[in-house]
Image (cartoon, rainbow, N blue to C red; front, side, top):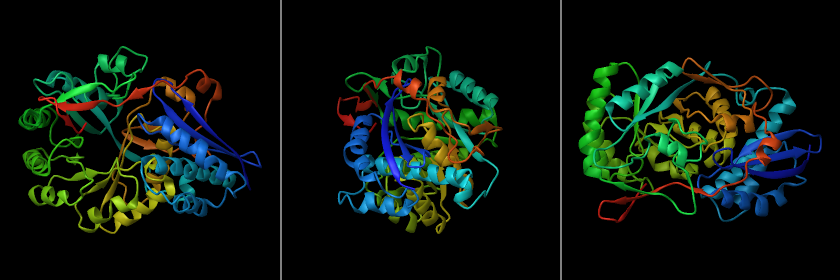
Amino acid sequence: MKIESAEVLVSSPGRNFVTLRITTDTGVTGLGDATVNGRELAAASYLADHVVPLLIGLDAHRIEDTWQYLYRGAYWRRGPITMAAIAAVDTALWDIKAKVAGLPLYQLLGGRSREGLLCYGHASGADLPELFDSIRHHQEEGYRAIRVQTGVPGLPSVYGVASSANAAQGGMGVTTRYDHEPARPGERPVEESWDTRAYIRHIPTVFEAVRNEFGPEMPLLHDAHHRLTPIEAAKVGKLLEPYDLFWLEDVTPAENQAVLRRVREHTTTPLAIGEVFNSIFDYKDLFEEQLIDYVRSPVTHAGGITALRRIFDYASVYQIKSGVHGPTDVSPVGLAAAIHLGIAIPNFGIQEYMKHSDATHELFRPSYTFEDGMLKPSEAPGLGVDYDDAVGAAHAYAPAYLPVARLLDGSMHNW
């Protein structure tokens, strides 16, 4: 079964997506996600100009060999653009293989290890009353685990806090409140301000209030979004220990992995890291020294199902679990792949689930389901996601960027 064609599809149903569709000489199609938020055209070009020409005529069943061909054969390895392109090919080939087998993809990964994936949703608010309303709203939608993000006094906007303004500026096509969508249309990134000391003073009081209001049982998560130094991260982890977080995410930029040793030695709050990682080598020291508890890489940015399965197998040796990144810039194709993988692996932890817009669902038509706080894969052959070309053609690419952050003195900081 040979690859006959491969199409790079760029569309923007409220936000930009890059999708690869591979078609075999027998007419079977497979989809892969290559979206890199704010750098979509780079991923599209890498695919169209450098990868697609190599695919034509290859055996669609040889998934591992094709992965190695695109990774080792390029010489210039790793990086988010390269690994997103490889992920799109890999996911599309798994989609094809499962369709040919007449099975949902998870069956080819070893079958079910569980009935569904526990998910967490994104509750946020500029202040405590708004945050409490958001938590209750997510509970009503069925979420049993909640990520808590809040405004910081003195800062006009903060990562992770949704608002009607964010929805309008984020191109969602709505003016009502929506889960935080940080990418904003425009020729330049929006600039936000940040004050670490104000954040550290404020965030423990938020979790104290949430626990007092909602009790000790609900799993609570929080994302520091790479903004803290190692000692600041250690301090926040220690301050949040009384509130029993499920995890504290991205406490510090993890390019220098040794810094996690300092955080780990000061706090027992579980740590989740890796949404910006894109290879197994990014995790080596973190796993072997057991410096983290959850792996955050998504299928889309870590080289596909083949590569992320290897990462999870490696993590399982050290009792480290999955916590796959699931924002709206991972398309329903990427999310479906994560669901099939999460159902099969033995060391699943939790799945981030940020619901896509109605317009996105019209484009991709996913058939996974969310019920009672859990995501469940489709039982259709393959991934269980279709792509509507007519809808895609109606939503052209629109430039959009993630924000940047500056400290109060004007110097650039990690967003």
